[in-house]
Length: 185
Image (cartoon, rainbow, N blue to C red; front, side):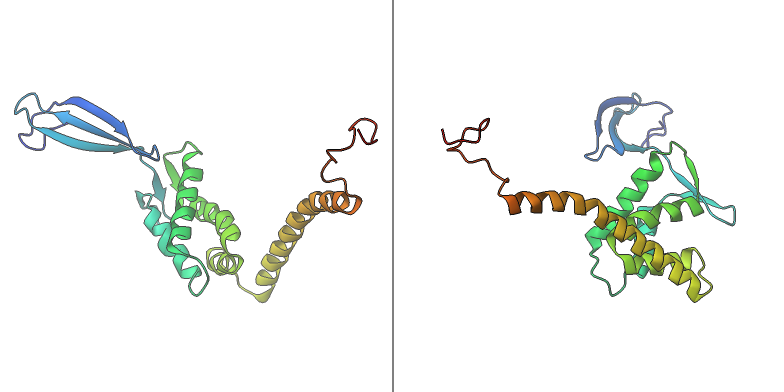
């Protein structure tokens, strides 16, 4: 690492610390020539290849800005958008690839956005997936309804067990009854 003060071609790492989220490393360095100290921040690079072939660094801010348009007028906070962008970045980093196709980034946004707000999801998907007709919207809405019903069906058995227990009084054991025989102790 070149010294930013005297341009000497070497430096010594004095201290290293990771950021709270573990995505960056902050290093304090000292130049052996001028003895001045400086800080560097290191991150694993993640690049996005656009449709035009241009490569640019991944940006959470671009994710937030793109999704913000879809969330206009919806009950979605800036914190929600920041969390969504962080989830997208974490998912993309788990692929292990340093270069990602812009289409892959867009697909990765769809899942967390669907969980955050279904209307915003439809807006984003309609532009991202180039909906051409009402049938495209109907298909997306049908898919959302099917997912919602599947989620509700997964919750129903647990709710039914709890309701059955409440109906029969089997929720809490009676402390005055012998657990094995069911007779008063």
